[in-house]
Every structure is written in C-alpha cells, then in structure tokens.
Image (cartoon, rainbow, N blue to C red; front, side, top):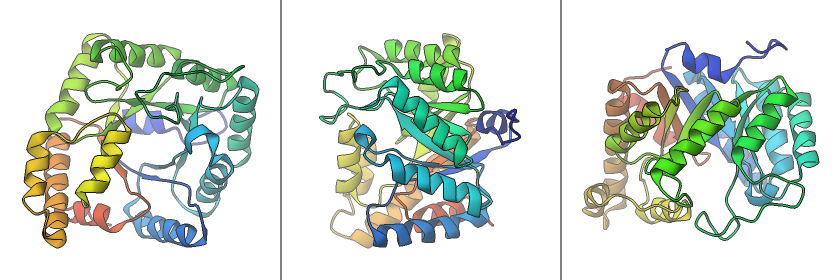
Length: 296
C-alpha cells in the first residue's frame, strides 16, 4: 500500500494471485470515446487487478491520458495506471505530469523511454533537458514519491538494443532504479516469454514480468503492429492463421483459440498473470476468458 493509501500494482502482483489486466488507448474523437467506455463497462465486472492507459508518441495524447485515467479512478472500481514516456518532454514537464496524475488520483505509472517517431529501430535522440533512458524516468517517479512503477520488457529483446543480453541488463537497471514489475510487448509463443523470464532471473531480475496478450483477429493489423515494434510474427504462428486468410470468421475463431491456448500455457508455466491489449474492444478478451473458464 502506498503511503497515501492508494493501491500499489507492484504489491498486488507480488502477492502471488494471478493478475489480469487490460490496456486501453486514449480515444481520438467522440465515437472513440463512446467505444472506450463501452469496453471499460463490459470488462469492469471481471474485476481486473489494474487497467492501463497508453500515452501517444511524443506526448500527443497527454491530456487525454490524464483525463481517462482520472475518470477511471473516480468513476469505476478499477485501479488505473497511466503510461508516461521520455519522448518529447523535459524533466520539468515530466515532473508536472506526475503531479497531474496525483491530482487525478492516479498513483501507478508505466515508465517508458518511448520510441522515436520513425519507429523503434530509428536512432534515439533525447529531448533537450529531458531523459535518455527509461531508468531515469523510473528514478524520477520513485523520487517524486507516492508511485508504484512498472516498466516494459521485450521477448527477444528490444529491437533497438545491441542484443537480448544487453536489453536484459537494461531491465535489471530499471529494477535497481525502482521498477516494481514489468509488462511485456506482445507474446506470440509461450517459449519466448519463458526464455525472457529465465534469462532475466539469471542476471538478478526478480520483479514480476507479466506477459502481454493480443489475439490475432486480423493478420494484417497485428503484423503491422508487430512491425511497428520492430518484430515479426513467428512463422509457426503465422502459418496457423494464414490457413484461414480467405475466411475472416474462421481466422478470427482460430486467433481466439490460439490466444486461449497461449494464455493457458503461460499461466500453467507460472506467469504471474496476463495483460490484454484490448484495442478498446472487449469482445475478444471476454471470449478468451470464456475459453479459460474465467467468469464474472
């Protein structure tokens, strides 16, 4: 429990009970706003451990992220976590955003370096007066006080890292700076997640690492998202989906089945929970829960 009485995500995950969480993104218009709150209302009965709200590239959705996380804190039973990135911000601006989170009743943050506008493989150029590494943002949130801090982890390593080993050293440094848990990028195969956890543990990373889940309902869409994060869908996963490429309904059903299989493998193998990238929709997540016999 944080000093101000707020619930701490890191502590909730470390308790050992399986964590289920949902990720949303800030809506861009009125229709998107309506869809977001529809998804939130449909997923709230599942009593997630927490929900997170992403932060647009370069801080483009700063105000909306703050508004949405604040409304979740005030008007729902769910525990919100706001994303925060180094991209496009000075230290003073980041301190101001942390203050705004507190004012909105949000005391959990996911501290990210963020990617350049050109993509994760592009050369990183820090903002003048800002930070170069996520661990600096973690330390700032820690020293600011009153926050439980999560960070990102990457199966196979961040595409901008020299190697997976170097990326794991960065994860360890973020832990040393105050990170209490990590959430991975999209996990396509359980073996990739468990390799990440095993190698991280071997160098001293002992914070919980929660796998990120996104069912493949539209191959092109997920492939583009994977490409944007500097990755490719593994060949064996792609093959199972491509069999149904001319039948959208069958492809979607196979994507849900594969995601449910993956979730079961992850939980059976000891993952501390599951973090669902919802894309502001609830149906796929609810279908996966039904396959796993997780009910409201």
